Figure 1: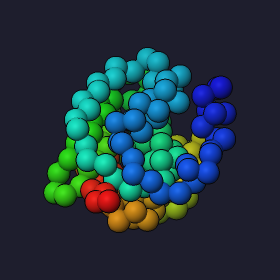
Figure 2 (figure 1 turned 90 degrees about the horizontal axis):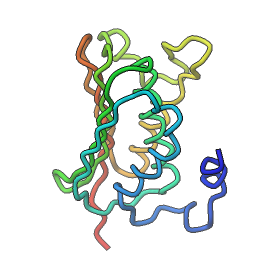
Figure 3 (figure 1 turned 90 degrees about the vertical axis):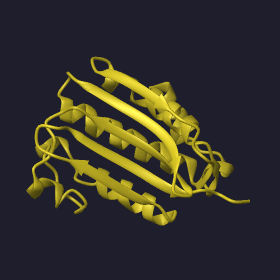
Length: 162
């Protein structure tokens, strides 16, 4: 809880877009998400992503969101794989799970604000906020999911060139 409180107290440099190390973002998001991930196998495959220009606090929030969604999909058992890397003049964070996956009718709606499959425990704002965050910084959100094959969410951002 203390880490979450620290996270909400942003300094001035955290409120503006800044050159950001995506591996540091992943580490922070995992620390914040640790209680929710307690019974889930976690696989980390951190590469050497290039530096990107984003608001670090927003990036942590988006990553936590993807981790919590993956944990919810697994319902306490399964594997979440978190990867980082560089490709096509950009860098990315990926959160994948080996849960039930999404049928096409769900996948086609998950970017709609307020659409949720979680009933009263979900707001339907998580994935739309992640999508808006990636778009705000010239990136994109890639989503792959098939029923029975889990889901993969990748936030890609252009490489920062000072």
